[in-house]
Length: 344
Image (tube, rainbow, N blue to C red; front, top):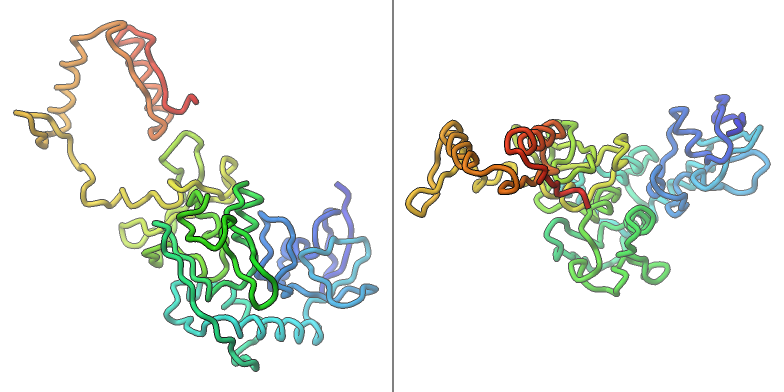
């Protein structure tokens, strides 16, 4: 790919031809506020906060949709740019609640961060009167339309990455809102697969996991549900998992997760989870030691050989454990009857 040279706020920047001004600035560590841009999604230019001044170009173009060009001179913090961003954000806040302190997204909210950067302390415009619409039909997350800023990220990630199209924007202007593609029906009744990618992309508290709790640290790991090997970060509080997000650097999933990987973590600390082997005695399962359970299994397996035996391996265990299972089948039980749940 060819390289082009441009100047951003007096800094000479070398960028790859075809990328946007916003991408070039981010690569150089230059911050430009935005609420709709995302490296995983196509340029959108909806929030109008990433406006910049570019020599020999009329108006204030959106940096997220403007490609770099040789010799381009970009300024991101002129008085005109700052005034435009401030006015845009003030208008946006007229249609957004003021209850930041009791919002689950408080201090993790992109709108909050951009407002602080732009310098909004008291909006000049009167608040709009809107009726709050909360959809809690989905078992994993809640949609609160009063906190939606129409950035379109939820609609775009569902279309561009998941390929499902479960959400869309309805109407124009002040009557615009996000609805399900089947009409203004609860999300649970739509074609939504509960993958949670809309929740992960939402910059405000409009889409939030149910029972959301702040974490004290993150732990990098691999999703245990199937053999794809999706990378995840577990949000941990104390010794409890309180959330999951996809690892954008993992080559298998690049940050995306399915419903199980995104929300299926509560089994880890579930009170009904088994903590010791169970052996059936007199028609009832009773707790036993691992040594007793393994001895019982070995004695039972010893009664069968060859085609009397078959093993089905699991995608939820490691490659090494699966290797041991096939060695058990072939070398110990003398059979090639070995299969795996993820060979589909």
